[in-house]
Image 1 (cartoon, rainbow, N blue to C red):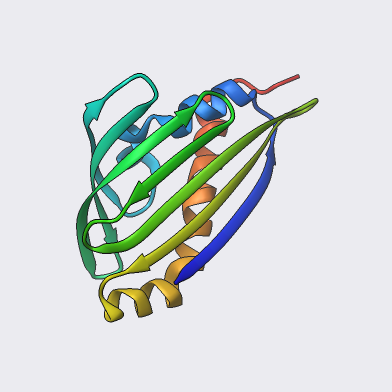
Image 2 (cartoon, rainbow, N blue to C red):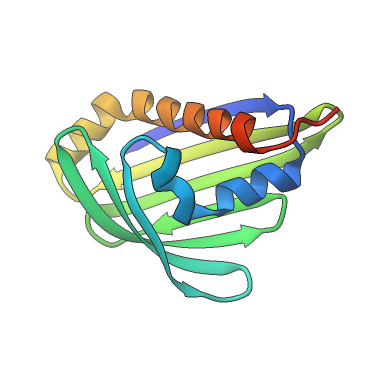
Length: 145
């Protein structure tokens, strides 16, 4: 199983950061390796998404279920191939100077080969993903004074 956590203070309002992360359909515009993301079902605080991600020389399409707790948490889960288990938990906390964002990534692949690749390259890929979100926030969000 692959586990990785990242925590960052950001000079942006919690609401703005939350909305940016919740907008999964925009990920292909700025997240490395994200080829496609389409919401296929939606209720009040949940949505199902079909996503395609390229990791190194592999390309995987999968479905996730996202549960939103507005301005506090975003929980993304999957348990269908290629995953045995996927859980991505974003947490958002207000700070005087903006927000504090935590990302916990837990993934177990069905394939040993995919799991070995994830274990090897996962930390770099998660860090690149976080860097992409930080860069995107700086481009589109107003700074908190």
